[in-house]
Image (cartoon, rainbow, N blue to C red; front, top):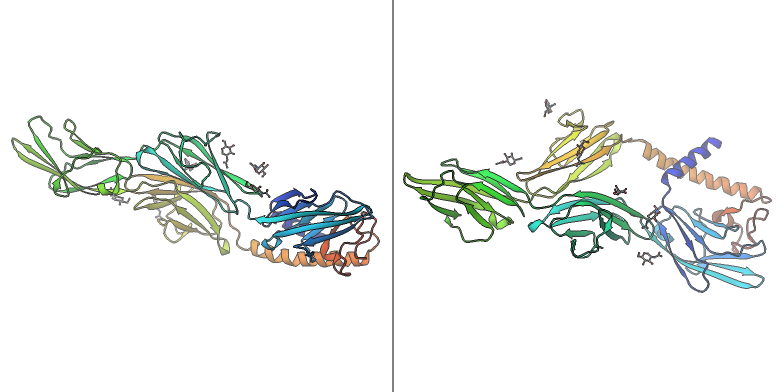
Length: 443
Ligand SMILES: *[C@@H]1O[C@H](CO)[C@@H](O)[C@H](O)[C@H]1NC(C)=O
Ligand SMILES: *[C@@H]1O[C@H](CO)[C@@H](O)[C@H](O)[C@H]1NC(C)=O
Ligand SMILES: *[C@@H]1O[C@H](CO)[C@@H](O)[C@H](O)[C@H]1NC(C)=O
Ligand SMILES: *[C@@H]1O[C@H](CO)[C@@H](O)[C@H](O)[C@H]1NC(C)=O
Ligand SMILES: *[C@@H]1O[C@H](CO)[C@@H](O)[C@H](O)[C@H]1NC(C)=O
Ligand SMILES: *[C@@H]1O[C@H](CO)[C@@H](O)[C@H](O)[C@H]1NC(C)=O
């Protein structure tokens, strides 16, 4: 029994969630209290504690049903709910009958899922703006942002409100950006290091004669295409797009001295075939290129999941066009079937059992690249299942143990009484529950 007790404590320790505390002793006003899903709520329901008082605990205006997760400590006046689930939402009240009259404490308990660690992703937009998204799980989330420790409520830094899960930063911003997420039961933060977004500049040499060179431009960035190496004042240049004379556009420029054609603030309409005809004394020279526009790679997000039998799957997700993935573990490329099930060039990889270390996902396309790291520990396939079953069995055994102990020893009861054990005798649940020397059970 001793060993089992130790194991039980260990397992309960592992599954412990957030503990919230709420003072609901204000008279006549129901207090708003919050509880965290899977956690523990402590509600102070009375400050009058005496052996002579009667306590009646209600939920949603009915006498509280017995539940092994509920306990009331007569000494402190604290009502505790453990292992909170969604059914614990509701109005709780405590009536205390004293010699001077009845005192009622009332609270409304709202259950929320706690905040999970946020994931941040960043994307360069056109004109040097950048958008950062913060995604977290949990109920009733509130977001706030800071840049280098200063709150971001300044419109010179942001377009749009600083309380959304996505923010758009004005051009030229860089530094450590922090997303803080909170609800009524917990909070969490994540950081991302920002560099200035002035768009990706790509360069392409399209001077090879008689072939159409494949060139790439980055959405929101700048493309430079070398279209001729013959530059002289006596030459005549004609620039075409899709076999028509190029229309004037403030984003286009051609430098006669260098022979470089430049497109700024690239958008999807810039896709197409460009050609340059140069008329010289010796004849006509044509350079031709096909410009393909791709959205640049955004910083990848990594998530990890333990599968059965100790395998683990890691997913890498990034934004951008035409993405190619590659993986490495502790700096070594993952092209070895002893490490992986399946190809090492997918956005998801499944690692063979026993793998740990620093896993890097590298993503690239023809205009940019980005990488992200995640630290892997070994995934144990069997333990969680056994632990879950054991917890259930041991909790049942513990409940039975408490029940029999209280039935037998009516002379010395603990101050902290599981309500399940008090429910057995009769309908009057909490009559005359007293401190260290009192009896457990009804009148
Ligand atoms: C929960 O959080 C919201 C927003 O922060 C706040 O307005 C509300 O009063 C909180 N409720 C409780 C019960 O703490
Ligand atoms: C965030 O949670 C911690 C406890 O985990 C608490 O100490 C801190 O005050 C909370 N911060 C905010 C802003 O609620
Ligand atoms: C974010 O950065 C701040 C400042 O360096 C640091 O105090 C905090 O612990 C970091 N938070 C996370 C989640 O890395
Ligand atoms: C994995 O890639 C490295 C270099 O990229 C190469 O030297 C090695 O032979 C490859 N291993 C396998 C099993 O393909
Ligand atoms: C574009 O990227 C793909 C994949 O990385 C590569 O195979 C291809 O050669 C690239 N094309 C050019 C023209 O750079
Ligand atoms: C990933 O880890 C490697 C090795 O520690 C480091 O050089 C690299 O900067 C890290 N990359 C990111 C995106 O954190």
